[in-house]
Amino acid sequence: MKHHNPCARFATDGFAVLRQYQTPAQVDALRSEVQRFIDTRLPALPREEVFYEDKQDAGTLKQIQRMHLHDPFFESLTVDSPLHHLATELLGQAVRPVNLQYFNKPPQIGKATPAHQDGYYFMLEPNEAVTLWLALDDVDEENGCIRYIPGSHRRGLRPHGRTQTLGFSQGLLDFGADDKQREVVLPARPGDLLAHHSLTIHRADANGSATRTRRALGFVYFAVASTVNKDQQRRHAQLMQDLRTAGKI
Image 1 (cartoon, rainbow, N blue to C red):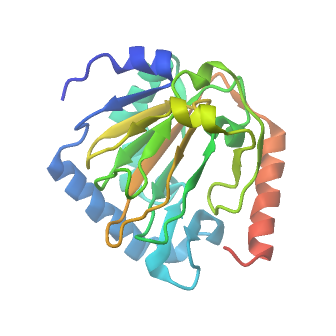
Image 2: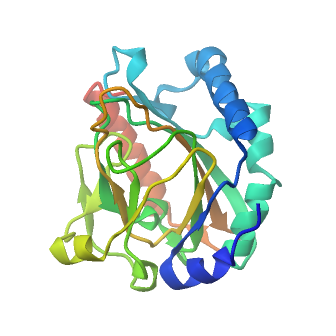
Image 3: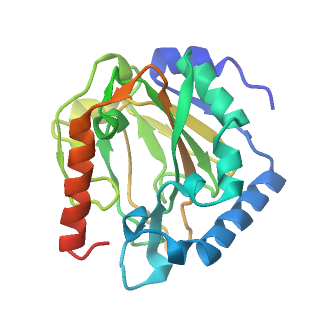
């Protein structure tokens, strides 16, 4: 499907929406591949790659990290793919694939995603990266659609601190009413693609639905010209140790 200059909106607002990026048949195939991955690949993954709302309940799976490193199908989606080329176009420079994540907010127990900037996690110099978020379910205000603050990518990183949200360990410390008033709420249908810059502030509410999941795939690409600060690697290692000590992974 043709889209009206998503690069222009991405440059201005720090995010863009490509409706019906995938057809219903493509979305069905993706859902099947995700389930195959969960059934066949998940048991062998390192525990720091898989997060549950309740570690004792497999039905509460909420996040899988780096799927492209563990399965040829998901590697083909991520590396030298249409999504890879789209990320290059949006960022306006060469990019390299870093992560393919599966996200879910299980019904009733899927927690809110705190307001944050992906770039705080990435710690890139310069902080140039893009996340492509592909909806696999209907996602709306009831089950936790994404909310963006337009133009926030042009104002640098804001202060972050530790949260209690597994998988989103850092959140904005100074997120307030003024920010909420500026939010753009973006519901998505299956196959819709949302793209945002690493400095764009965004968040999502909890899943308040009694029955509906909120599944998506997230593709992360770093600018080739950007380098990762070594503090980020040390911080990630400490976080993983903290989670293991707390029995969360």
